[in-house]
Amino acid sequence: MPIFSKPLFCYQRACTPRVAGPAIARPFARSRLFLLDNSNPPRDLTVDMHDLTRSLHTKNKSKIVMLVADGLGGLPETPGGKTELETAITPNLDALAKRGVLGSSIPVKPGITPGSGPGHLGLFGYDPLEYVIGRGALEATGIGFELGPNDVAARGNFCTLDTAGLISDRRAGRISSEESAPLAIKLRQVKIPGVEVFVEPVKEHRFVVVFRGPGLGGHVHDTDPQAVGVAPLDPKASAAGSEKTVEVAREFIKQAHALLAGEKRANGLTLRGFSPRPALPSFDEVYGLRAAAIAVYPMYKGLARLVGMQLVGKAQTLDEQLGVLESEWSNYDFFFIHFKYTDSTGEDGNFAAKVKRIEELDAAMPRLMKLAPTVLIVTGDHSTPSKLKSHSWHPVPTLLLSDVCRTDGCEKFGEAECLRGGLGQFEAKYLMPLALANADRLGKYGA
Image 1: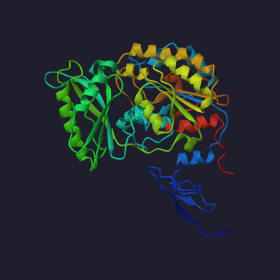
Image 2: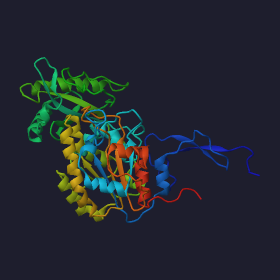
Image 3: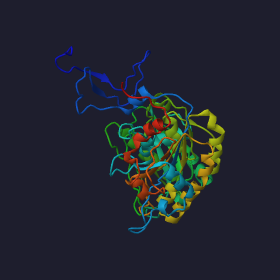
Image 4: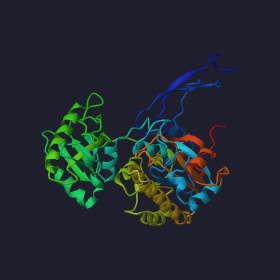
């Protein structure tokens, strides 16, 4: 006979650690119902994966490598044809596919097209619907700018405006960093009463602007219309409390356009991803991993820093990234390697160039595999089909290799094979628990 004649429930803050010492504040903590006897739990009982991995993760000497080919997934140019990945000659990735297990990851939810931030958060095991990070915070953190409590950051794109003020090139012809950096520095001349304005060069056509002052909110719509032949959008608040930021952004754009008026290509700008600094639990806390990031572009460095990864090396090419991986191999448990160019070629609508970039990645695999990682993951943060010239909602090809993975009989690394792979279609946020399990870094749940 149980002590209680009816099930007894209690509420507990889901994200409060059961450890001695002060509580650690975590964003979006939820109250959940826990059953105190042996009755079946209610059907709506939710489980926080980070709470679960915190309780189960173990330490060993295994090495996990997550190689992210940005925008990897694609589409055929014509119905019934092959995607960019399927068109590419990839003998090394195909050989790994035969030894490993394939699947298709869903970055956010079916039908939802993700930005790069949500796409990577999902790969790192952070629910992108729960942890929302603006692009501005990612860019600022990625270049080493320390955001304060009164800061709102935005990612800036230089663009080309025609004589009618319409956008003719959203990225100003992808001008070089050498050309764009002086222009970003020039924008430091903008002065707005009551607000500090910081402008920092990033890379190529990108820069960061940070507004600092009381009463600023991060809920402002992008001014990039994501199209040519139209004018930049006027900044507008997407929620109450950000009206002051809208006025500040509007004044910044006005003064910036006056400063850029004489430029041939970068004579305009758009602002995206208005955001304050977010708070995220770290990789070490959630997974028990010493994690390192080897990325070229600041945005991805920023995301890695925000989840507690160490930025290692100053690589600018894939060859240099592999050199950093080799030199840091003994110092970390987990390595995130970011390869950008499968995304940028897709956004340019250049099918052949994306194929070449995939082949470049394939050629690097033997050098990576000489390190004998315990677990290798090859995937993307989202799909960027050349046919669409943009991010898309399509599931992303995913390869997982370890000595204990259950192989699935797939022969090649491509979208069609991944659709029949053993991992099936799964939400990207579950990839990290799979990596930990294959590295023998998760203990048994329950008695």
